[in-house]
Length: 253
Image 1: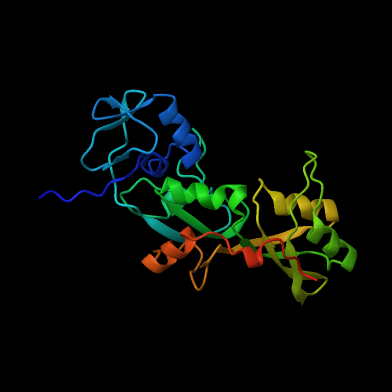
Image 2: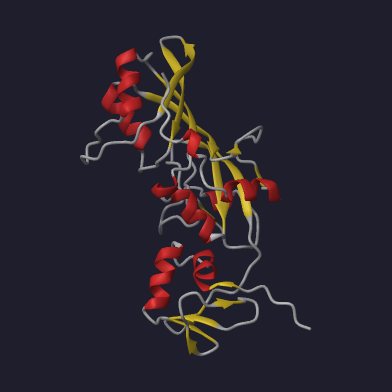
């Protein structure tokens, strides 16, 4: 007897990198997905190891085991698997030696460092990135000036960025003073490009270092810069759980 592991098509497509489950449902409704030559229906299940699944006539990428990796990204390394042509800067793919095709979940800019999750699980990646799920991300930020209470309160309640959008409430507190500056603990539930640096620039707090130490339930721990490790099954399951409602929308006081 052949043992099959059938899953809903939208979940298979999301894991293969075709976007969120909702966008994959739209692919199915549009008739762009076929299973064993037949137009797929919403709610249909399949086994990607047995069934022939195509999107717009093209088969899904060859099935690979799901891989989940925590990396401590050093400064001056690109958070991408492929640098643009002519760009000789190192990428995170240069640091992680595994055969599977993996991609970073979110990014840290070139100057920033700390925890980066790399995986080929597109479904999990979309859950962690999509603002609707509001997964926390925690940072340690060294600023060159000690913030006053007004600056902290402004950040906690939301700051209007140069593009006109207002940031969500955040948890911000001084964890340690250092000369004329200070280390801040920042917990956010969104991740616009260079958001912390833009907020600090608007508040008059020059950033010296920016280190991400947590993504949801996953912690950087004792990983040294440039080092990486596989996540445990328990860590993967914890990341898949919804963000705790009790922690949403809290701000530091």
